[in-house]
Structure formats: structure tokens, C-alpha cells
Figure 1 (tube, rainbow, N blue to C red):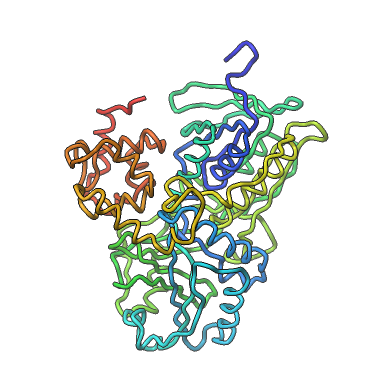
Figure 2: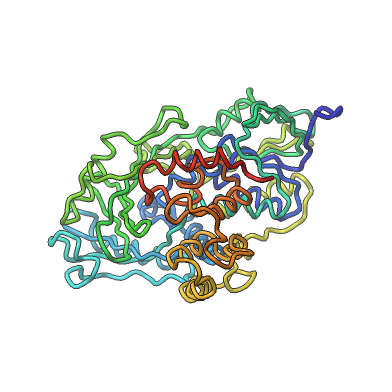
Length: 514
């Protein structure tokens, strides 16, 4: 610590390395603010890597009259697709219909509204479908003869967080993972935050403002910073997913209706699998220890088995994950009805006090808009006049056809990938295709100076070379085997048993280069 009583000085300290924190850090750094982001674990290690992996307007939110939220999300859907076409892609959803469900006319009216609440340039509209003569009807039970088809998008959620953190770093932000904020106090026009790193070293940050983007821990951090302030309450909702071997061979996803009013998705996942989820349950436990239970597994298996000819059983599950969504507390009694919109709570302790902005609620689709609104508030408080910029900017690796987001980057992604397959034909085709999806144009940084397979270093596991691990450690804050196999990639699903332990041993024997 310096004689002044702090080690680092900045305009903005962001606490929380999920999608909201990373998005705010990116936006603020791009407006010229000096930004520090701290995250107690790895980036996207909690809620932001436990989503259903969808960029969507939220069709079912129309049922709760959340038209403003749906419109906002529908607009953002195409903004995000253009900004990161490598980690996102359009996806068509099939909704089978049967007697006893929501009336077909009501669903059709909802889809009509869904199509026209916001302008579409990339995604086709909805339509009815006769499942008996449609490829998506083949895995379904014969009683589901009719349904609907509509569009949304898919996203690699954990990589979306990392790309936002990378862009923040490229604009000058300091990103500190595995660094907890253990104390936070305001003294006049400055905040003093004590940070504790994984190595046990403490540092003090003096900041003109703080963003509390701690997700499920937002209320706890706010109570620490402002113990006398009554704040907006959070309602913690557990959402769990299961992954099974691929149930169907086509590229459509399904949205299934249940008798209890909930909906569940079945989505093509990682080429060889189907992702099924999610549940919605109030959660009172430790967010660090959230996990699926047997009842949730049975619920998801039983629901999709009502639709698919081949039943899905608990013993078919090859992987599960759960997350705690920190939603805004409202009057809804049922967890599935709790609003997915966000609220921003700004406290400046009167005129001239250092502002603290706390983030409540939100969903991954609207993270960029949330960040823009949050930084607008902070810039006003801090006297920064730089305008919003992220709506017209690519995320790292997303500049397939130029520096600004383009429709063609989404519509012609396959052509761009095929050019890479030719450029790097000395690598296995499936490896180049995976790199293209994960890294976009950053593939050229990963492969810089390499012209033959031997240049990739040791093959640590099938399809995982030392060169990629080095890249992830250097540019993406990867430290552990889980960071690499489950958040930066989903290789953990594809590798043989023991891969995590073997990789952890290799990492310990080969320290990352500074």
C-alpha cells in the first residue's frame, strides 16, 4: 500500500465478473473511464455460465404482459448476433401443440406480436407447421401433428462474458479474477475497497464510483457498503439443466409446454448432445453450492418424454449444471412469473458523494442495454461526456467482415469458416471449425507463427493442444482445468474420463508465462 493509503486509483471499480459486470466494464472503459473489475472466482463461474444459452426475446414473458422487456430483448437479439457471430447463431424453434394446452389461436397471436414488436433483419418470422411432414416431427409422438415455428438465437454464454472482459481490457481496464472484495467503505467523494487475491495478498483500490454487479451476492455486498440503507430485495431462483446424448439429428430446437404452465427447451448442443432445461425454483441456500437435485432431473426427463417417442430417463443424463438467477423481488408467487427485467439503484449519499450503482435482476439477452444505461448514469455522475458506443461495435473475434457489425457476418458465417479451413488446412478440419466458433478472427492470434501441426505443441487431450491452453492463459484469464474444459470450451463433454485431472497436473507442471 502507498503512503496515501491505497494501491490503485480508478474512476470505476466493478465488483462481479458475470455478464453484467463484464458488460459494464467494457462500456465504461470504452468511454475513457479508468476501470478495475474484480471477480472472486473465474469469469462467468456462476449464473452467467448456467443459462439456457439463448439470445431471445422471451416468448413466455408476453403471458405476463412484459411487453417492454420483450421488445427490448428482441431489439438486442440482432444487435448481439451482429456483434459476435462466431459465438452466436440464429436458431429455429418448434413448438408442438396438443389439445389441453394454451389455445392455438392465442399462441398464434403471441407469435405475431413476437414477430412485430421489433424490426427483424436477420431472423425469419413465425409460421404454423404440419409436423407429420416436417423433419422436426420425426422424433415426436404421433399425437403432435401440428405446431408452430419461430426464431431466436443461441449463444455460448461463458464466452460472451470473457469477450466482454477482453474488450474492456483492450480499452484499458484492469481485470482481476480470483480477487474478492472483502471490504468497501465510502469516504466523501471516494470509495475504498479492500481486495484479496488468491495468493493471499491484499490491495486497496480508491475509486470515484463502484458498480455492485455481484449477482446472487448483490444484496450482501450492498449491506456491507451501506449497512443503514434499505435496498431492493433479490429473489434467488434456481435454474437447472440436463445434457443427454443427442435425441434428434436435425438442427431445430424445441420449446415444450407443461401442464403447470412452465416451458422447457430441448436444444441441439455440442454436436453430439441435447440440452434440456430449465427449472424455476426458489432458492434459499448458498449460491456457491447450488446443484441440481433428483426431483429436478426427474421433472425434466418426464416433461420431454411426454413429447419424444424415445423416453428420456435419469440414467441417460451425462452432465448437469445449475445456477442461481438473482431476480428483482416482485409480487409474483410463482418463481416462473418473477420478472426478468432489471433495475438500477444509484446511491450517492447526497450531492457530491461517491456513487454506488447496484444491479438487480436482468437476463443475458439485455446485458448490453443494461450496461449502456448503467454507464450513462455513472458518466452523468462523474462528469464524463463520452457517448454510448457498444451498439455499433464488434466483440473480440466478431469482426469477420470488418470492424463494424454486419448482417453478412451472421448470414455468411459458413463462407468465412470455409475460408479458414483452406487457410489452415494443415490442421484437422474439425479443430479449425471449433476454433472458428470459439475465437472468430482471434484464431489468427492463436495460430500466429504456426504453420504445421507440430507447432501446436503437445496434444494434452484429443483436440486440445498446448498452444490453445497457452492462448487461454495469456488472453482469457484461464487458470484451472475447469476454466479451460467447461467455461472457455465444453471440451469436458467430449474428452475421456480423467481429462480434468490430467490437465490439472500438466498445468501445475507448466506454469503460465508472464
